[in-house]
Structures are given as structure tokens and as C-alpha cells.
Length: 186
Image (cartoon, rainbow, N blue to C red):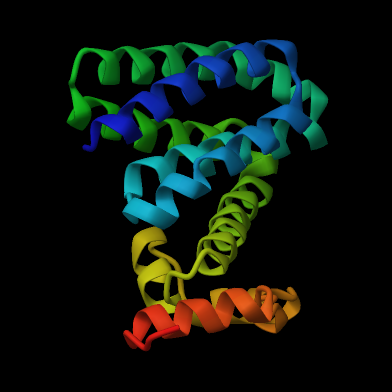
């Protein structure tokens, strides 16, 4: 794992622990968006997985206050262990803990199992659309997240991502750039 990504995930996990303890779902959701930048540059599965866990937690805490309190005790412990694993360069242990964390989120309550799975799947698709918005292909994004390309394309079609056009810079800057590119004298 790249050191920059590792440091970012360690920082994010530390912040997530604090936010989960406070039941601050809005900040948790915002925190998960922070890792999208790394994921779009490095196409890194670890940062995506961490973002999905944090996003799913934010949704669970937001929608089910009582269940959110039940989750907090075990989740905070797992988040701390995951953070410590990365700090001690035990990347495989970190990955295993993140997988366990997702399973625990899904098994917290039988009544919420379908809801939680839906949230986790939706979180993957939402994150995928944001990664695609950073310029990564739909196929590569779906591969990174382990989701269906059709689900991702359907969600992206509902957003305005494909419609966004880059605003061209000043005409003189573009002309100057073109002259430099083709080595044309001024």
C-alpha cells in the first residue's frame, strides 16, 4: 500500500472513530468523500473500502438511532484495530478487519439486514460514480469496487456527471498553449 494512502486512511479512521462515538452521521458521510481523491488517482481498493465502510456507518447511524448505538461499541473497537494494524504495517490484517467490519454491519440486526446490504451496495455505486467523475473509466471503477457495470451506468445516468463540460480557459491562454505544444513561433 502506498504510504500517502496509508497515512490518509489512518487519519480518516481516527476521525471516523471520533465521529462514530459522537453519532455525527453528516460528518461521517463527508469524511467518506475525502478518500475519493486518493482512489481516483491511485485506483486503490483499500481507500475505497474504507470510504464505503464509513459511508455505510453514517447511513446506519442516521436512519436508525437505536441500532446505531448498538453498532457503536463493536464498530469503534474494530475501527481502532484497523487503524492500529495500518500503523503497525499489518496491511493484510487491516483488510481482514475491514471485511469483518462490513459483515458485522450487515449482521447487526436481522430486521435491518436487507437495509444494511442495500446501503452498502448503494454506497459502492455512489462512490463509483464519484470516481468515474474524476475520469476513471466505468469498467475500471466497477472492477475496483466489485460492482456491476450496469448498476454504475444506471446511477451515473441519473446524475449530471456525463453532461458536465470543461469550461475552456481564456482564448489567449489556449492559443499560447497550442503554440508551445506545436513549437510555433510567437
